[in-house]
Length: 76
Image (cartoon, rainbow, N blue to C red; front, side, top):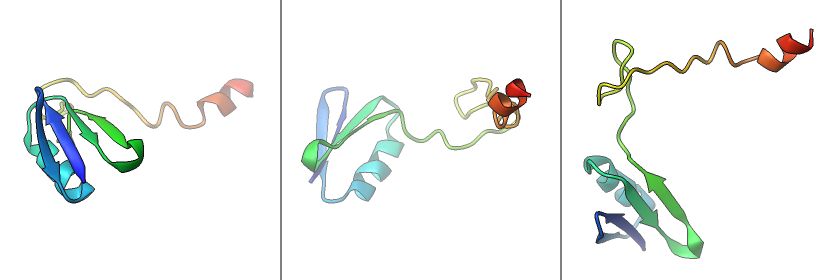
């Protein structure tokens, strides 16, 4: 059993997939709690970048190329 909590409202789901699908439909910070102390927290649903911005309009500036090999390059 998995519980999705958003704004102090809890909703139960039989599987983690169902809980995550539901969490993605909410426009709030959620906590998903499951067996064995599993706890997943965050705002779900931001999965695309268009024209350099996330769906909520925030500029997306992370650049993978500038991070890969950085330490190796600094040692040289």
